[in-house]
Structures are given as C-alpha cells and as structure tokens.
Image 1 (cartoon, helix red, strand yellow):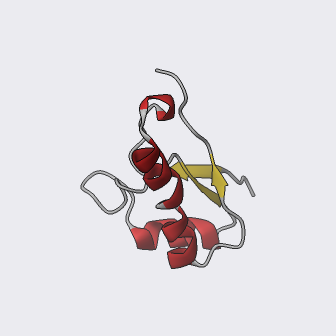
Image 2: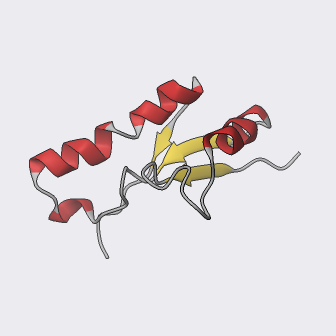
Image 3: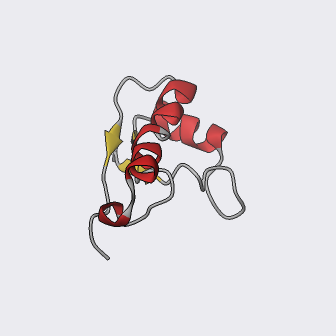
Length: 79
C-alpha cells in the first residue's frame, strides 16, 4: 500500500529508457500521483516568455491525455 508521486518531463515520455504513456496510466491506476517537471526540464528563469509558456502549458496535455483528476508540477528554477 505504498504510494508515490511521479514527476514526468513530458518531452521524454515515450522515448527510449523513459516511461511510456501506458506505463504512466498504470501507475495512476495503482493510486500513484502523476505530475510534471515541465516539458523539457530547463532552468525556467533562463527562458524567454515563449519558451517559458511552452514549458508550463505543454505538460498539461498529459493531464488531459491520461484523464488525470489531480496533477502536480514541480519546477526547476536554479541549476
């Protein structure tokens, strides 16, 4: 009955050596919480407005794709 929170860098999802969408769905079904580390895991304070918006909004696609009721984000602000 151990639960955890998995923060996904959404641009890595489905790539070799990273979780695939069905695996994330299974974790969620098992009661795990799913969140995001942004789209590409950059240091957000170094981004222009366009890249910042993309890195904050694109991860929300995974929330909709997986039909998640709760969704968390944790952001990288410094190296």
